[in-house]
Image 1: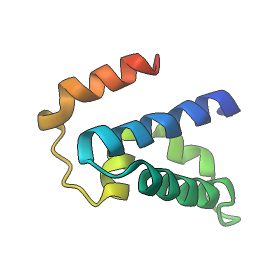
Image 2: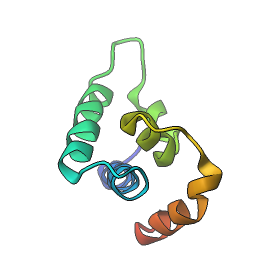
Image 3: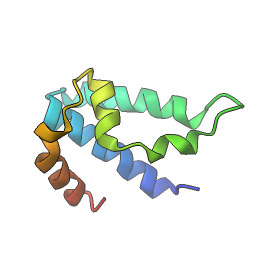
Amino acid sequence: MIDARSRSEFWKVVEHCMVELFNVPDVSARKSWVDLSRQIESPPENLDGEVFFHAEPYDVACDLAGARNDFRLHQNSYEQILSQHRW
C-alpha cells in the first residue's frame, strides 16, 4: 500500500510539472490534480486505485495539462523537479 506521504509527494510533483514544464497556472494545476485524485481515491469497485501511482508524475502532468508528451524535451527539468521533491 502506498502511504499518504508518498501520495502527497506524487501530486506535488505532478503540480510542479504542470506549472513549470507546461505553463499551467497554479490554481488550474491544483484543481486538475485534486479532481483527479478524488477519482483515484474512490475507484470503481473492480479497480484498484493503487495501480495509478505506478505512473510517472510527468505522464500524469502531461495528460492533465493536455500537453504533448515529449519527455526528451523536458527530461533535465523533470529530473530537477524529482530531485527537489526527493522523489
